[in-house]
Each structure stands twice: as structure tokens, then as C-alpha cells.
Amino acid sequence: MHEVAGRAEPGLRPGRALAQAASRLHGTAWIPVDAAAVFGCVLAAHALSPVYLASPLGGEALTVAAVHAASFVLAGLAAGLYDWTLLSLSRWTETAARAAAAALLSGLVTLTAFYLVLYQPIGRRVLGLSAVLSALAVASLRYGLFRVLPPRRVLFARDTALGREIRARLAAEYPAAYETLLPGAPGAAGRPAGAEPSLPDLVERCRAERADEVVLPAEPAPAEPAAAIGCLPLGCRVRTEPAFYEDVFRAVPVLHVSPAWMLASGHDAADHLAEAVRRALDVALSLLLLGVAAVPCLLAMALVWIEDRGPVLFGQVREGRWGRPFRMWKIRSMRPGAERDGARWTDEGDPRRTRVGRLLRRLRLDEVPQLVNVLRGEMSFVGPRPERPEIAAELERAVPLYAWRRLARPGLTGWAQVHLPYGASVEDSRRKLEMDLYYLRHRSLAMDLGIVLRTLTAVTRGSR
Image (tube, rainbow, N blue to C red; front, side):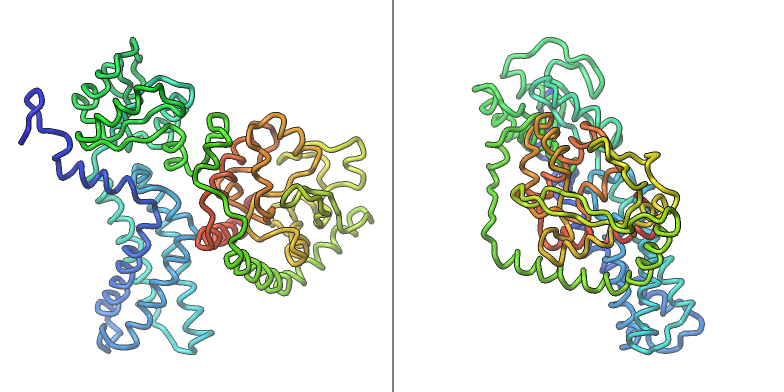
């Protein structure tokens, strides 16, 4: 084995190879692992139950295990259990809470499926024990990997504005998962960078610090890629700061990328099959929800009218796909004439809201009429939230790449909505745009399903 200053060559450590492989996987890589673990937990619950006398490997137990495993995966998507990369396991306590929520929700789904769909009884002890074992198994697997994997050491080739933002966020959000280094720095994150080193020093620093990854600026100097390539034999991964930011934070750093960078992965508006499937799902889901929400909406509109005798519906012009305007409908939640002085931002404590309107917004009942916009093809179920043309024009002047949101139909919910709180400023809009652009670059039907499930759980919690 090669030695460098009396230490093993970084690229040859098995544990480091495992960490490298884990860093390339997103949270959804846990889905088959969780499904298998939950399936086994249900069979174990049948075997441990004192009142279940049949074989734990019989047809009845296998059916329960299959239904419970499938419902756990869906509940995990709804609970946000698969939102982050494997290296975010430093937040394992939060992950454990989400696993417990998924186990509880999947237990309810399984119980409903057997009693109302399959018309078969299911033991309460078995179901309760299955939920407990499933939550423990899923959380324990993640905690075990968290304890085994070493922190990922990331070497930044230069001290840039985006690099400083990345390092600050890593220190705040994933402090135990990453160690960040600069070529001139004597140690890990938070230490002074010192003088800029020569490019050969990048390789030496990578070797000495056993870096797992080298991150180049968005626009590297001519010699920097060659220096970074020299780090590849040491077992390092090499990419740019925007690519690192996008992969770890699931967002696009709009202040630090160009339209050319956005086009690098391509954008296809001619995938007619995917569009047709998405449109069919939009129509089916909208009709279903309109049927379910009809009575609550009629009651809500009656309360709106009783409160101030004003109109119950409120129509507002919004920007649609390709910038085409359309009228979006809501159940009115503000006083009549609230915008007679012109368009303005809406925030959580907006005094223009009525008492009934605050309740409607919290339950999101005010947005149910937008299902009609979905049926008309003006909106989709998932996509960037539609903005008012006046505010969109302001944001387009203030925030780079804002116009890219128009590449997709606006949505009832979206990637930004399930990850960020309600915003009412240019800075909040920039953060949401980062999420919207990530969605546009990576959207798929599976991603849409996860967003819809997350939105349903947000509604049941009454969040807004």
C-alpha cells in the first residue's frame, strides 16, 4: 500500500469508498431498503403475537406485510422521509420522528385497506407491533449508517461568494456530515483561508487532508480544471460549486449561474407522452378532490357571505405558462376592496384578512376553486405557484432567471411550497425560485407524486 507522509493513500480506504458511494445516492435510495425492512417487521410481528396462531409465512401474513410495506413507502414520501441525501443522516433525530410518523400513518392506511377494501379483519396487536418495529428498524438502519460513515471532507479550490454561502449552510444544516476546507486554510470549516496557494498545492492539500471532494468555482480559471483532475487518482470527486449546491440543497443558486448553465442539461417541451400522462392525472385528481371538497367549500362560502355580505369568490389575473395571463379563482379571504390601492405582497399577519379568511387559508380551503383552473388547463397540480403580472415584472428585474418559471404550467402546490414557509419579499421569492428551478431541471411523475403527498400532510397539519 502506498504511503504519504506515513499515512495510507486516501483513495484505497474501504470506508472512504463506502462514504463516496453513499454521497451519490439521494434519500429515495432508501425506498427498497425500507420496504424490505417493513415487510420483515410485519412478519416478525405475526410471529411474536401471542394471539396469532397461523404461520407467519402464510398467505394472510404475507398479504398484510406487502400492503403495509407499500403504504409505509407512500407514507414516508408524505412525511418527507426521503427528502434528503444519505449524508444528511446527521439529522437522524428528525429522521426518526418522520419514520415514526410514517409508521403510524401506514398503520392507519393498512387498517383501512383491510376493513374497507379487502373486508378482512386484522389483529390490533399485530398492527401495533408492526408499526413499532417498522419505526425502530427504519430509524436504526439510518442511525447505524450515520455512525459508520465518516464526515465528508470537501476542499474548495477558491474562496468565492457562493463557496462561502455553501460552507455557511453546511455548518448550519449538516454540521456532523461535512468538513469544509480551503487550500490555504490550516484546518476545517470556519478557519481563515490564508493566502491563495499555487495550483499544484491543490493536489498536495487534497492528499494531505484526505479530501473526499474538490469543488471548483462556477467559472474556474484556465488551469484549475487540470489541477482538480490531478486529484482524481486520490479518490476525489470533482465538480463545480453550482453543481454541489444543487445536489446537496436541492435548489439552483440563481445568483451564481448563467442561462447557459441552465441549458447545459437541456429542456424539452416536446415530451408529449409525459405531458399527456401529467394532464390526465391532473384532470382525474381535480375531479376527485372537487367531489370530496364540495360540501366543505359550500359551507366556507356561506361563512364568507355571512361575515360581511361580500362576494364569496375572488378572481385575480396571474401569469401562466409561457407568460400567458389567466384568471385564477379563490374563495375570498380578504375584505372587499383590499387591493384598491394596487398590488402588494401578502404575509402571514396581513390585516386585510377576515376572521373566516384566516381559517380558510390555514386549511387551504380558499384554494379549492383553483381546481377549476386545473381542469381548464391553465394550471397543473404541481408546478411553480402563479404570480401576479405586476409582481412578476418586479421580480424579473430583481432576481436573475426568474423568467424560467414560465417553462411549466403554474401549480396548486410545488417543490418550493412543501419545503419553504410562506414568503412575502424579494428575498423569499429568490429562495423559492431556487427551488422552482430545481424542480424544472429534475421534474418527473415520481417527483410530482412525492410533492402531492407532502402537500396532503401539510393540509392535515393546517400549515400554510
